[in-house]
Image 1 (cartoon, rainbow, N blue to C red):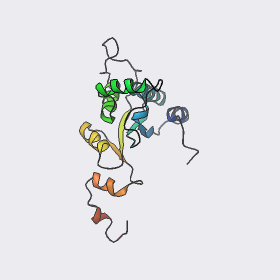
Image 2: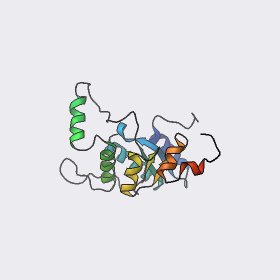
Image 3: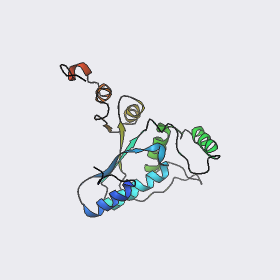
Image 4: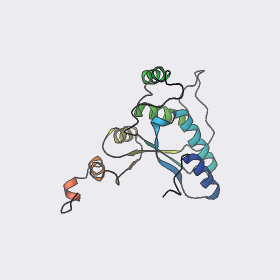
Amino acid sequence: NPALGSTSPMVLLSHLAARTGRIRLGVAATLVAYHPPLRLAEDATLLSALSGGRTDLGLGRSVAARTPRTVGFDHDRPHVEARLLERGLGTFSGRCDQLLRLLAGKEPGLQGTPVDLLDAVTPQVWVHAAGAGESAEYAARNGLPMGVAYFSRPTTVLEAVGVPVPDVFEGQSL
């Protein structure tokens, strides 16, 4: 529904937080390759404070976004991305790990002390996956809930959760 879509989901969700009191608010799949983990942690924590702790944060990995997008001039990009990859932050897992450390108060800042975020209920983190790939493995490895994109690739989702595909679709054409 175009009326519910937003180029800035956290702004829209802040608006909804001010007008609701019980529903949970969140983004199903924030593409972590396009959002610096610190900014994402700050935005999600602020939304959690504004909503009274009703925030869900879904993390997604875009097939088209294998490497992080960086801010800066094009000639800076290879150097910045190389530094991110050296620190393990140029991957889906690396960026999600840093985000989880930030939300837990365990990510060191420039001075070596943990980065301080708002004092709010930590958002519920989810991983959004389309099948039994890297996202599903990350969710399992870290004990995180997983949302699945059944609408986009039903057979890979069923395989991800261990349902034999022929049993489910027996007699139906795929």
